[in-house]
Length: 520
Ligand code: ME8
Image 1 (tube, rainbow, N blue to C red):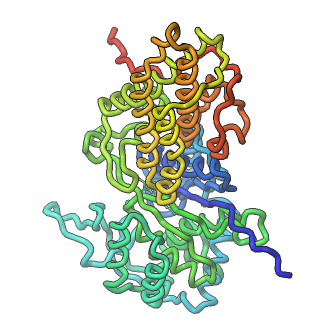
Image 2: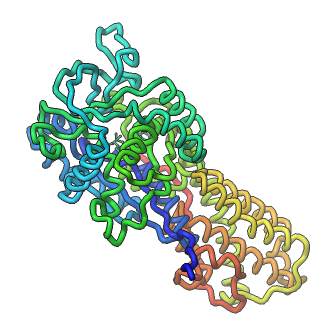
């Protein structure tokens, strides 16, 4: 008898790997936070999750930064990779592996995928002449560039391009045009959101040229097997990090079963690399292609593009210090529809902290739990018969998980949070309407029921808020007396009600209001 096929219970998710030519900025933090929320959601939903992040350490950008700082590229990479790891720790990013592309295993991995592309007849030697942007680490066709009034030629994303002429290996990308178009058709979820998918499909339909995949004018990179004069084009090795991270080239590695990745989370500026080049490389090498690429938007400070010269580059460590880690995470995830650009400023962050967190969720928890502490000595009472109002709010709470699951399956993180905060708003109306504080003398049994129902709704909300706000949610579950074990706090726990008789520790405020610091 054939063994029963087990449904795949694993979930492999990645961020882009950042260039460590500088310290992390808010765009990096945003991507890490969003990917972390998606990873935590699947973990809480019972999946075996592997979450990869890291740094992309080769390429000309690193060389130029190193020259400017009079250090080696490796020194710069090591120094800044450390800072990226610190940011992840500070922001409570639950990655399983932090990969650096200078690792020995990654060099072997990149050489193996290269050898397989050679074996498939897709790599040939020629010479490249054309435009290259160091900032984007990208080759651009002449018609993609424009000559500015300042006489500087720029690529489609506004970065200056240089003329390059050198011997180079090429990847036969042109041979993959139809295969890629078939991929987009047969896997309609391959690229999200739809706006990005349309952009990629029309780029591929417009015709693909072969891609220059090696450089000879510098040697900081992965050596081309059999021709050490060449190092690989940085994007060839950068993309390969996603398979190195789960064990490649050792396909017997304990983590290799995670491949193909369920989703690569990236910014919209690098969709072409992930949705065109990467699947083409994988097809050429005979490796299954990833299941999905999802591109988020860009963040702008007060609507302006971040730049060092404007002086509006916001340090993620400062945001965490000023507003709190969970507050910062919540703000970006709730405020910016994931997939669209977003703007942020102090007033908007404070408004979310004070309205959504301190007033709506915080007060509801605080008021109901302090009544339980005072009038029930912190023991959750047995509820009486549920009224229609009780049943309605419980039903709405019970409905959150289905809404959140379907939103998170397509990376609509903000929608999952909207569903949760819709219940918080309704629970506040319920609480105000039932006025349990007035029931102590007139109808104590009814008061007990209202407080029980409120505690249950707060519990469900706290469970579902964990992906966005891991620490604060866990504190909230603590003061609800929920045991700190996986099955009491993951989504399985949503199927049963909070236990009457459980003992609640003294309530402590979880979401303080943001108060402007007074200037001395
Ligand atoms: O592109 N808002 O690295 P990177 C939101 N090494 N996201 C932003 C952003 C902003 N203002 N600025 C950048 C690279 N990002 C390559 C990736 S992957 C195999 C190699 C996002 O440090 C950007 O879109 O320039 C990308 O997803 C990530 O930050 C790293 O950008």
